Image (cartoon, rainbow, N blue to C red):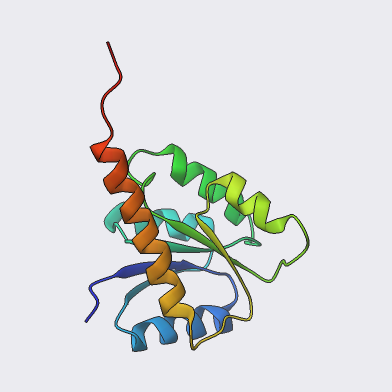
Length: 139
C-alpha cells in the first residue's frame, strides 16, 4: 500500500474510471469529482496528496479551479497535475502558469501513469523540504 491519496477531477466518466482503476491497482487511495464544485465539496473533508485536474470541466474550468486552490493556503502545497486532451502548442504553459506542477495528455499511458504521479509528488516534496530549510531573510 502506497499510502498516497489522489483526487481525480474529470467530467468524463470513462476517463475518471480508467484513471481511478489504474491508480487503485497501483495502491493509491482515490477520490473522485466530476466538476469543480464537487471537487471543492470533496476538499472540505479530505486533504489528498496530489490532485489530477482535467482542464475542460463544465462550469468552472480546471485552470480556474487550480488558481483558486493555489490561492488557498490549505491547498497551496498540494501538487496539481493537469490531465487533458488539449495538446496544442502552449497548452502545457497555460497549465503551468495556472499553478499546475505537471501536464499529462490523454489518453493516459496506463503502464507509466502511477510512476509519473509519484515522480511529480516526489518533486513537490523535495521542493517543500528545500523551502522549509531556506534561511529566513526577514530583518
